[in-house]
Amino acid sequence: MQEESRTATVQPDELTARFEEHRRELTAYSYRMLASSFEAEDAVQETFIRAWRGYDRFEGRAALRSWLYRIATNVCLDMLDGRERRARPMDLGPSREPIVSNLNTLPEVTWIEPMPTGLLVPDGDPAEVAVARETIKLAFVAALQHLPPRQRAVLVLCEVLRWQATEVAELLETSVASVNSALQRARATLAQTGDAGDATAADLGPEDRELLARYVKAFEAYDMEALTSLIEEDAKQSMPPFDLWLRGRDDILTWWFGPGIGCSGSRVVPAISANGSPAFGQYKPTDDGGYEPWALQVLEIEDGRIVEFTFFLDTDTVFPLFGLPLQFDG
Image (cartoon, rainbow, N blue to C red; front, side):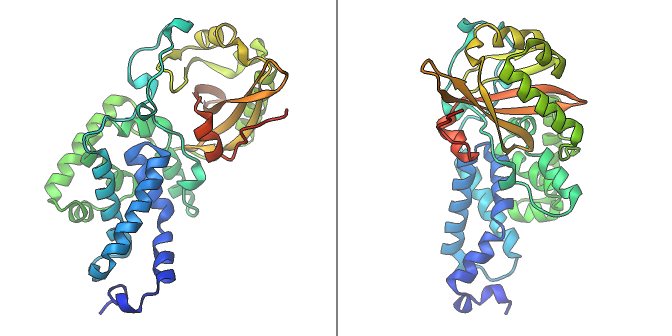
């Protein structure tokens, strides 16, 4: 009899330790499926609860890791049943003019949530780390949400985690032909969204870190000339929970120096990486001379320029997740 089937000899601490070995990868998997940091953590907790309850029926016929993925998949599919997909503002409509009247707030459940990179990306082989970082990028996670839930599971298991079609078919209790068909359709859908993920993400190099330092200095000074030199001409900006998004450096700076002028004088504090990208906590000046939390800024960099800004404005939720204080004295 295999060791994992001898439930009577497995102590609670030992079983908990076995489960915890897989927490990070299960969190990453659930996050790609659900696009919500908090729902992903809830899904992993529910996975462990179901595993605890069902462990006496686990006979070691499959590896513990595969069994946990089966449970996690079912948990995620249950959570996604009948629910609208989460999205980014650019998924909901075209960019619009940078004016206040175009601001519309949508409910929290509409939006993809950011996630600290360290909770998702494993240590180890640099190639595997690069794949993990690329496949948690906000754009890639958003692209996944265009897929029906089972197709989403197939694509993540096959393309991201590199499972064999036979393994995925066993996990989903379907045929290899069905898995291959779902994978083909999922690839086609992702190709249409324009972000299939190329697994080329890497740690920031010295030039990128220098670029970010220049950005922080320019943003805090609200130096339009310096900011213009750092932002790509066709860059994008979004500000969940607002559905307005902007395309082009001119529109972004028109917003910053127009409706967004209240951000002048902000302080920008480095945060832990979000979704494989650099992140900062922005604290906006208040009338009494202090600062208030305003946004988690997540930046995308390509070829020495900033190509995308995502400002997550729900600071009460995201700042604690990223270790940022809700009070700032300057």
